[in-house]
Image 1 (cartoon, protein in one colour):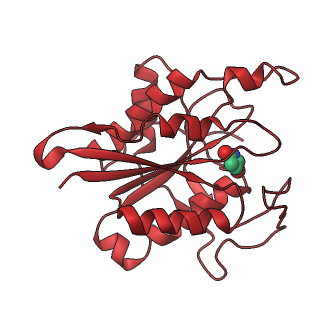
Image 2 (cartoon, rainbow, N blue to C red):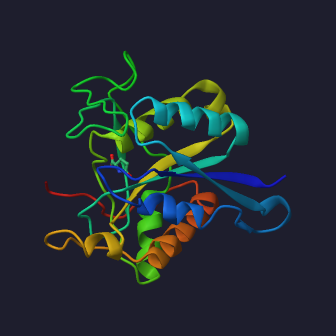
Length: 224
Ligand code: PCA
């Protein structure tokens, strides 16, 4: 029985034609590596960029695949690196409307649930391994307050429930930069990461996540 890894990416949003997160995770759909007890199979699923609907799609993917590890991925336009997120907060505060036209302001993702959850992926080990491959990576200490944080929080809340805990299911979220073809048409222009590089970094994140349950004690903080 192979270990199953669920990767999620998002629909394009804010008028964009593509979302690098879906382009990157779908490139790894069906990827298998390792053998015997160490066999791993990767499944990619596309999430709507909408509050609520994203968690409905996540629930369907979790129920169908029963994954051992979940890595959700989203676009963070303007970032210059592959950024595993440290913390999900119990807050929806949309700067813009989601794809369903909703813009919740200061609402909890899950009423009455904890203020925050930490990712349970080895985020510093991922950053170190991605850098060792020659690609820019750093820990991020905020996933924002839009649909990415919403999905990340919803995921970690589900994984904090006793059945997921008993099974040792781990999860987290990684934000990735714009694709060069997006940045080319934006004022600035903002930093970008080629799709092949995002896919290579994600491949490393999957391999490190299944191989390592303990994170490394490396500095990954920020002053502000
Ligand atoms: N990025 C947005 C939502 C979907 C995505 O790819 C975010 O960072 O919240």
